[in-house]
Image 1 (cartoon, rainbow, N blue to C red):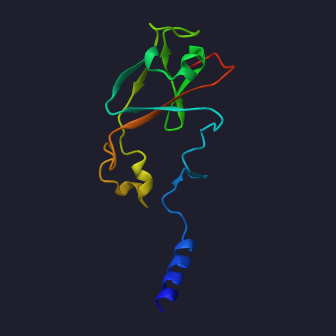
Image 2 (cartoon, rainbow, N blue to C red):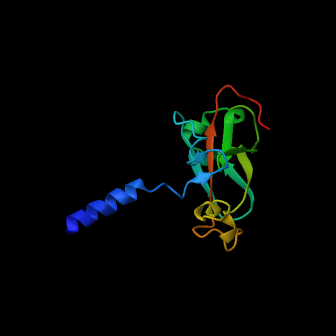
Image 3 (cartoon, rainbow, N blue to C red):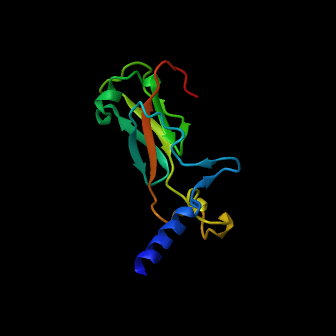
Length: 144
């Protein structure tokens, strides 16, 4: 009897639709649509609003040998503007700057059947840190 009830529960759970996916009104989004899986991404966490600087010495070797005009920063799957002290190869005195914001509740809204039920959209239920991803894109030299 117990095996039958476990089997029925398993089949019932498989038949349920995924309800915590992001829906933009047209498509179901999984959050990884912006990723190019053939290139590396380096994550930087930001817990406060402000301007952040990444010095050349903190860059991984793969990005340190990339011309600065090919570097790209992504937040929530969208490219954001960055400032680099040079357009060519970086040296010890060069750096990257960007404006970062702490995590708020914009992604938490997808967890509610009615996003209006979210208690406070200015605070996340999970963390205050936002993830920014630094990568490169070859052949493109114009940023914003």
